[in-house]
Amino acid sequence: MRLFKDFYFTILFFTILSFAFADAVNTILMSSHVTGADYPKFSIYFRGLFEILILIWLFFYRKIVVKDSQILAYCCFIIVSSIFSYWILLLNSGVGNFAVFFSLLNKTMFFFLCFIFVHNALEKMNLIQRKYIFKAYELIIYINSFCAILGFIANVPLFKAYSTVRFGYIGFIPAQNEASLFWLIALFYSFYIYKEEKKKLPLVFSVIACLLLGTKAAWICVLVSVPWFFYKLYPNTGKKIVAFLLLATMVFVCVYYEKISEYLKSVEMFSYFVWRLDKMDAVSIFLSGRDGFIYRFIETLDSWSWPNYLFGGVLTEGNSHITTEMDLLDLIMIFGFVGAVIFLLIYKQIFSQIHRSYKTMFSVLFFSMAFIGGHVLWSALNAVYLCLFICKTMKIYKT
Image 1 (spheres, one colour):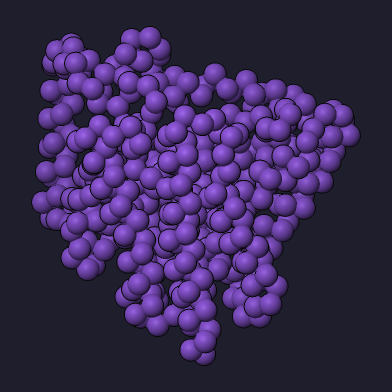
Image 2 (cartoon, rainbow, N blue to C red; image 1 turned 45 degrees about the horizontal axis):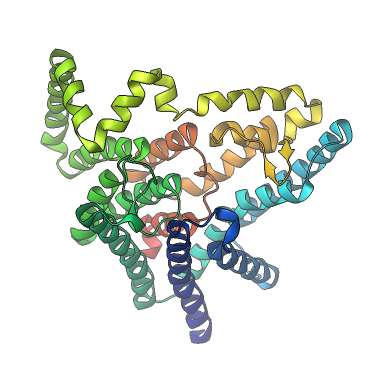
């Protein structure tokens, strides 16, 4: 029994740290002005090895609980159905790349496999081992937030989120949309341990780093979650105070809109969005120009036969898939309408295990982020971190 506990602890502890290390290496290589095709994506290799390990473990593990069995059954069903549907699309169109499609399909399953392994691994560990696992994740939060703050203070190019003059500091996370989700998870994780364990620093650093990231998704997360945190901490007075502040802010913005707009243009943090608002409509700003990709969704539907409407069939061009970069639309393109519903049911089953005090608000922000952006529902970078947050809020894993 001790041997199994040590095995699970060693694998998960090494996985968390090695993923963070690989992401840091990727960030450094990206900042050296090397194009994406010219350097090895170390994070892909590390996560690929971890996925292989999970598959081997699933083959030999004989104590899968009913809920995990249901998740695996749903995954197998939509994988087989989507492959069959994609084969129909290839026969009808004569154009496609099965390797590219299968790579995308594999990516969509990564979080589900991670969750099954991570929560089973934590269940096998003792309290001290679990504590070290969560401390490793907290260390990653500290490092990334410190690097973002350092980038802001010292103007370090390595930690800039954008190669242009746009404001944003990212730390050791290779992509802005991945970073937005990283800090959403970190915010809720940090709030949980602040409320339950009285740890203040992770929450403070997470809020600061989220603001410094400079993406709409990150700022929305802060603007929505921080008042919600305040309300949760002080339920008697929090509701009145939050309502008053929101009303006062709305009145202030309406009265002094022009002056505020002129001021924000002079502030580096907001100047990009004010400039974009002058050039584009509000919808394009909100979707970061992805509304121009909706035609891809329509073109995909036009190329489908009835099996594709049920279980999908995303089009490919060369070595890339044609998507809208909005996960909830891409979900339909990959899995079809029936497959998309099943996919979301898997998420519902997993998210239902989040502590009820955090489940609704986190789910709203998570799926809102998936609607306005991409790489949320199948973010390989954040898969293990999301699992750790969910498991941390589950009573059986309390440390």
